[in-house]
Length: 292
Image 1: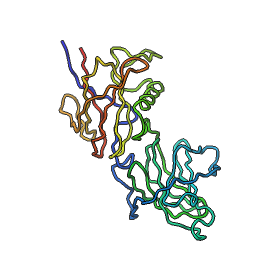
Image 2: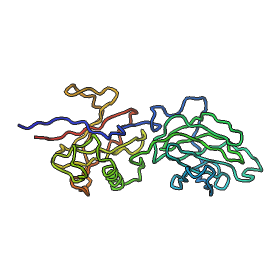
Image 3: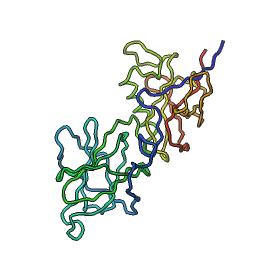
Image 4: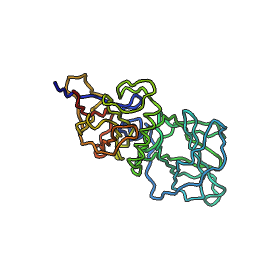
């Protein structure tokens, strides 16, 4: 007798988040500041030393931008186990000898979920305050008063399993999904395997690897499964109104899976592309599985 159950499968750590600011459904923190995207956008020069100590790692692979021309402001990105800091300061006499200039700085938090409210810190005066932001075009924008001494914006972060960049290829996402599979052997999104076993079996359930997505960004979940298991379709479920099977589920989007070649450990790779779904919220990805 053939059964066709619906199975909800998702990464243990992250369910699907679509938000204008990574972990929030709000486009900006609460506050009174108005932030506009600058018409001019320049890649900033980077700081050459580390002012925060050995526990902070310099992230050269995360560019920072400003509406001040290159050579007027210096920035840096620093990370420890739980936090990220964006430092900035003016170079000598950037604008007619001024030592304080209002400007916009921005960066793409491509590797992280930003958690909580960012804090602006001035080590010279030891002042700290919450700072507002705008999230647009996959960047965080901050309005700051840059001075001739170092200041920094600090916030808590959690690692993103998959980068959310339009330029990231399917192959790159698949490689990252393989790393997740290798490191985390006991996710709820597949059937139990023998100790140390990493080869796909006929009983293997699909693995869905996904993280957070910008509302207007590229949104693709990477799925690893046996091709005999899948029906070729996927759905998004509204997690805030999720119901127990067999009750009807709140399906908000459906689409067809795209084949993406064979998996290195057996089975096949698939892509669930829902880039045209732009509703903020928290969702599960569901695939229909054929089982006997």
